[in-house]
Length: 130
Image (cartoon, rainbow, N blue to C red; front, side, top):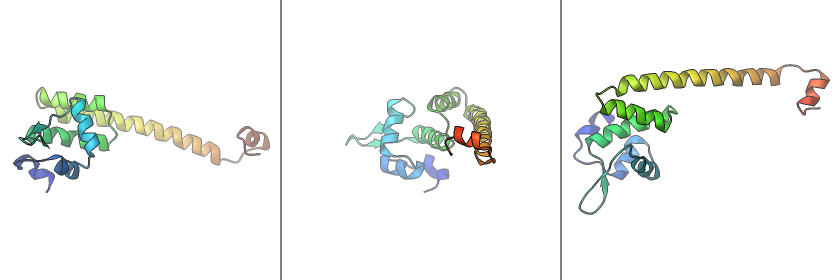
């Protein structure tokens, strides 16, 4: 099953959604509790996801994979619901996330360089390496 045909499936249960989107049952229930996705119930009370829910799960899975926060994901889903602007909103959120990670990586590299640089005995003692 590919992502291209997820919207044409007659029915996608929890197990299928877990496989398709790489999410756990706990995560699916959590997203439901938060109101990010709505699962339907069949006559046996088993969850299934209609095409709208599948689209929302695809957004959620993709953005969580990139480390986007739940409030930002909610913004993307709302933008998609309010006129199909999810792609533009997601792009802006991902660009901001990339800027944050770049800054964090810069700080990490700075600290690594400090730790790897030769130190005088006094500096080594201050860092607990004497």
